[in-house]
Each structure stands twice: as structure tokens, then as C-alpha cells.
Image 1 (tube, rainbow, N blue to C red):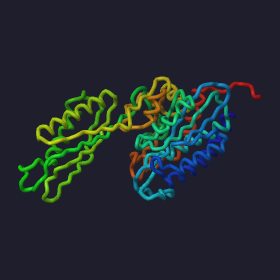
Image 2: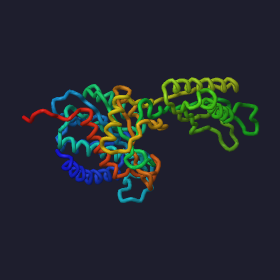
Image 3: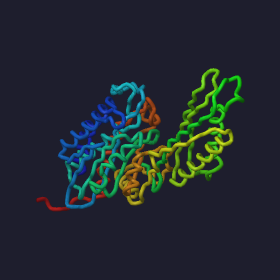
Image 4: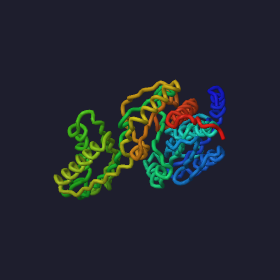
Amino acid sequence: MTAAVEAIELDEITQRMVALRHDLHRHPELGFQEHRTKATVAVFLRNLGIEVHEGAGVVGVLKAGKGGRVIGLRADMDALPIRETSIHGYVSANPGVMHACGHDGHTTMLLAAAEILARSRDFDGTVVFVFQPNEEHGLGARAMIDEGVLSRFSIEEVYGIHNLPGAPLGQLSTRVGQICASETLFEIEIRGQGGHASMPHVGVDTITVGSEMVLALQTIVARKLPPGAGVVVSVTEFLTDGQRNVLPGHATLKGDMRARTPEDRQAAIGFMQQIVDGVAATHKVSASLTCTTEFIEAINAPGPVEAVIRTGRAVGLDVIPDRAPMSFSEDFAHFSAAVPGCFLLLGNGEAGAHGRPLHASDYDFNDDLVSIGARFWVALVRDRLGVDKSEPA
């Protein structure tokens, strides 16, 4: 297929993909509930003659040439529990659920690339298209890995794209090493002695104890870890059984901790435990700390990053090869922890809904990014697998 013919086909495919993107946006589904989305993806791939496997997510396998190398390209499919406030013509028809992170766009970019590659079949190896559920809760990648998506299809390298609002349209940025932070959710249970608000000395109210813990937790970043470590500790909920004139005897603190390295993550958890134990002992109450890390740190491997940078430049994108790590988390991290991988960001635009923050109720994926992302995916496949030079049968 000539470059001119492929450009014409990409324009035609993009028009259909934008319509599909709007359809997916209009029918968003939460993690592990992506039934309509999965069915749409599976039918689309089968109509292209691509081998399809359905499980937690959808996997498409496309082979060409005689090459034995296998790469995986991943897109996420789930939406968020957010009420959309946009005013465009394809607003969510599912009240309280919307695509506020662009997963509808990620899915359609990869489907567009799958169609181009299925038509041309000019690469030499195997592409595995991985359409993943439940990225937002950090559970989808592990569900697919547990089903054997990496081992069953012998994926050797894996790649993932996320749009980035506020960055110029199509600007590609990535880096070797840690690119996304881990997320550890924590919960502190405090059990003291409640009582009458007029007689606080009779018991030990858990608001006072909890407040002391909240303030002490901030010293982890300020005083216990090196400056620039990138750790963030945030208490996001303070729940008690107190009333207007009743001092609480029970309190729950919930929060979120981000880290750039496993070592800093474990150190921060250790400091949290010291603070909880120490403050509880001071006030003679009982307290417990529970931590759950669904999102680990996302680490990019040198080889895949070099390929992404090379491909981005080859297709004419503005490339930032050593961007600062992102503070958000991504469960692509579980894929790239298992096999070499690269997670990259593509600018979604700087103005209007395209520049709104991820997870904003009026955010929207930029339709102009569909063709850019598809073109990049296709070029990356040819870069990593090479062009099939075998003689036709």
C-alpha cells in the first residue's frame, strides 16, 4: 500500500472512527461493566478478519509475514462515575457515568490502527490488540494478566497511549524509567471512648486523636523523606460516629498516598504505621492502619522508549523524550512490570473541553487525535516488527 493510498484510507477510517467514538461516549460503562463496549470492539475486530478472544477484556490477534516477534498494543475502555456537564451532541446517555478520561478515544485510535494493519498486512510478525477493562480502579490489567494475556499470546513488548489535556495536540512525551506514580489507599481505624460534649475529660474522643494523626502524616513528606522524592500523602475522608453534643468514640481516616519508587512507597507506609501507633499510644486508644496498593509505579524500558521516540519523530510529531514523571497512576504498570513496555502521552489540545483536566465533568477527547494516534500505532508496529518482504504465494 502506497503512502498516498494509506492516507486516503486513514481519512475515510477516521471519519467512521470519530462517529464510533461519539457512540462510545454516549454509552459509557464503568469498570468490569463494559458489556456493550466489549461487544462493539469484538464485532469490529471480527469484521476485519482479526482473531478475537473475549474474557475480562477483548484481545485481537493479527499475524502477517513469517516473523516470530510479538508486540502488544493496549487501550482502556472504562468510564467514570461522573455526571457529565458538556453541551456537545453526544453527551452521556447513562446518568452519572461519563468518559471523562478519554478511554473512548483510546479505544477508537487502536481500532483505527487495527483496520489499517488488517488491510495492509505489510508487517512481519504478530500484533496483539489489548482492549482492557477497569483501568480506573487498577484492576483490569491484572485481570487480563491472570487470564494469561501476556503468556498465552507470547507478548514480548507492550505499549500504551494516554491523552494529555493542556498539551499541544499530538505532542508526544515519554521517558525511560518511572513515568507514573503508584497509588496506595490507606484507612486508619481509631477506637477511643466517646461521651458528652460537655465532659471531654471523661473519655478520649477520636476527633482529637484523628486530627493529630492528620497533621503528623504531613511530616512524612516534609521531614522524613528526601526533598524531591515525589511522595504525596493526602487524607481525603474523616468519618466519625459523633453528633451535635456527642463526642465520637470511633473514627475512620481514609486517604491516598502516591510514590515514584517502591522503596519510597514502603518507607512512607512504615512512617505511617509509626505515626498511627505513636499517637494512639500517647492517647491510650487503639488504632489500626490498612494499606492497599492497586496501582504500582509504571516503569518504561529503554528499548521500547527508544522505539516510541523514533516512531514519533518519523511520523512528524513534536516529541519530548524525557518528560517529568506524572503524579497520576496507571494500571498499565502491571503490563510493563511483566514485560518491557512504554507508556506514552499524546497532547489532547490546549483550549476548551480538550484542555480541561482529566476527570473533569466537561472534559472531552479531541477527535483530531484519532488519526494522529492511529498513524502512530501503525508506524510503531512497522518499526518493531519490520515490513514483510516475503514473496506472495
